[in-house]
Amino acid sequence: MAEQFYLNFIKDDRWMYLLQGLKTTIIVALFAVLLGVALGFTVGMIRSTHDKTGKLKVANFICHVYLTIIRGTPVLLQLLIIYFVVFASVNVDKVIVAIIAFGINSGAYVAEIIRSGIMAVDQGQMEAGRSLGFSYRQTMINFIMPQAFKNVLPALGNEFIVLLKETSVAGYIALQDLTKGADIIRSLTYNYMPLFAAAVIYLVMVMILSYFVKRLEKRLRKNER
Image 1 (cartoon, rainbow, N blue to C red):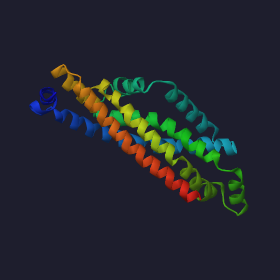
Image 2 (tube, one colour):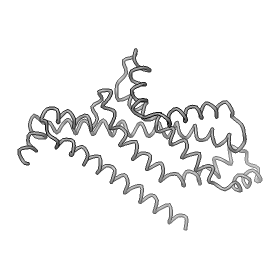
Image 3 (cartoon, rainbow, N blue to C red):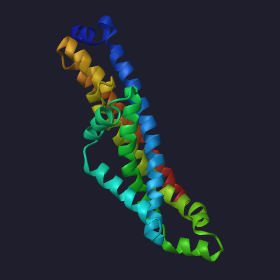
């Protein structure tokens, strides 16, 4: 076991493949979730506004097409299409391509999370805001969104966990993420140990994120009391 550990991680500083891959994975996941939240918030607001008022029909139709396509196709295919088709004639950093692809994919799911959070707020809240003289926009900002955001925070945390694991397919565009780094070592040593090492790293990151999500849920429940 000690010999295999030396061969897979110590010799020729092969552990650097995992470290560099981990750095790439964190960067892609972090910026993709930020893009996904921004995109999802916009789409979710448009969809919920249409559901409540019947306005923004064209924008809602575009959002509906976006959600149908993104949620109905595998994230791997979306990544490949964006890299080999959309950016085929442009020299773009693979990290940026991955951030865009995973951000667009995550945005579709975040949009439905945001919309469900808004629609879950009692309609009486909207009526109360309007009766006090607030416009629809002011009522959404001051009354509806704070409650909706509080309700969907745990779901958004879980979405980040899912996104973190989904980035493991980034190696298909030759991006050296954590999974790809482990596979490079495996191709050099013909040993399973790097793959298990990558799995343990993913597991630790997910456990840490899950811990913070649970802490957040407990805090929200205390505030409700």
